[in-house]
Image 1 (cartoon, rainbow, N blue to C red):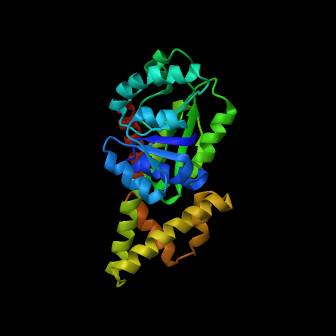
Image 2: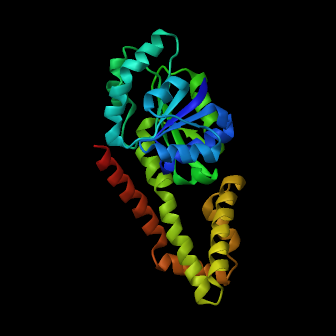
Image 3: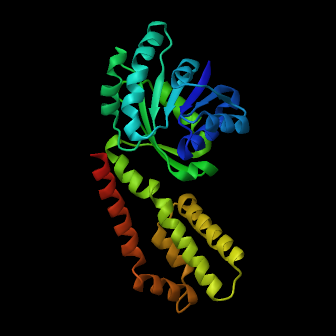
Length: 274
């Protein structure tokens, strides 16, 4: 039996499928997509298997990653309920792992209730950086899911980056900073590169230097254990060029803009969840 099936291989589903292939081996991964040619193309690239229907994917794998849009979750789970119950009677329980934003585990449980037993349900919230193995993914499980199954999902996603278990009630907050955050950082990198071009650096080098600087600075925060404010102070010499630049960032409202961006993303996320 395959280890993992991915129903829906869009940007996020496809990225996690890549991670699962690296972690478990492509021979243990199966893909399906509404547009079959998309699943077939990715399967050919990764060396895994594409199948023709969601039902086929569920029958072939143990862990089923649901990469469909939130509005498509109800019809998908409704169509799979009878199949899940039949497999359960045969001793082939499946674990469902949702990637759908705003669809809580309690809602999933109601949608799949027709299966006639307590289907193990998990939920993950990845960000786009999983595509390069540097992602940040939140994970939670419905009460009663075996610890071994939760660890299996963590192992399957281990090649995508960091996977953190957090309470589901914090998923909107997580999404506001880790999910939306890359889109906040990219304009900053672009702006730094624009500044570098304005003082004479060629564009390609400016983008690379800015991006690598951000990557290195993030690693310093994670690996040193120091507060970001302390690390900032360690770069700023009295009367030097760095503190002059920091002062300009403060005058421009960078700190307040970042706080406001996360708060706005959180508010909008909770609105969409309703």
